[in-house]
Length: 343
Image 1 (cartoon, rainbow, N blue to C red):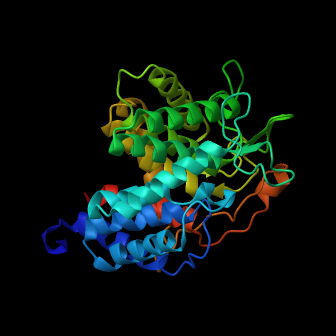
Image 2: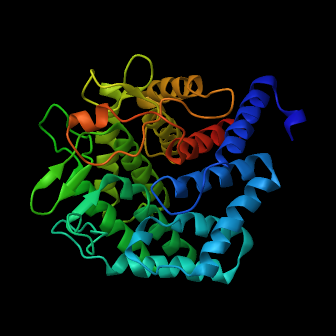
Image 3: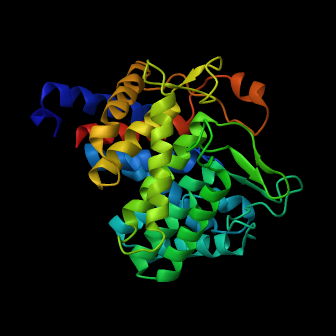
């Protein structure tokens, strides 16, 4: 395949393989907010490069998960539901679809807060009534995809209600300087908490785009989600640094520049343009500069640089002092972005 590519395309193809090869070294031992998207990125790399080692790696991990048993505890709210469905759509193994249904059933057991968002860890003191923006890329896109695959409207409603609850709780409303951005967290008794975290806004952007892509235009709630997507995109355009990156706390220029939001934005915006959700004439320059900046952050060994460590909710200092490293929440979106460039 690579021998027929133009030189620029061949370079991007080679870069994608380098990034995918580097991503295989992550120790996939437990589910977290990065593991699922890293598997999704490796699956995209497989689809573009036709390299069997990426397909086999993803398949081995997901099939092992299914054999061990799915949805046995609340910590599996971040298990790779979308990724199970991607593998199912190619292999048609019924066990994969049944596992996805079990994850959806687990999701439905979590209590709802007053705005309709799922509180995933009612078993843990301190997190009992807490939600996190990261979940916007995990839950609704998976549930809506499951609804489409099974032709079951209840899954679609489950996912749609959840992402609406998250957006209503976390997005800064109109009339303020930071309107459209998303807070990191929300606690039912206290309201929003944390900071206007860059990677969190990337999770929100991808979740909105992936959910909207699967919703029929006749859906009654589609317009609200679309308006929220436009408000977030407008805010990100406003706060993008001249380098193409964003500060790790989007509105704080004294916090360091970080790369994951640029990668997530480049990927999600191009998907939104293709689906007719956003106008490339309005947001095309933001997408191009984010993509170019992200590519500049790729090291020779395929690692994405300027990726901050896992970031708990806290004060500004918490976000501004997280160390950089090589993490799946950087590698996964990067592979998705590079796969777009090679199609």
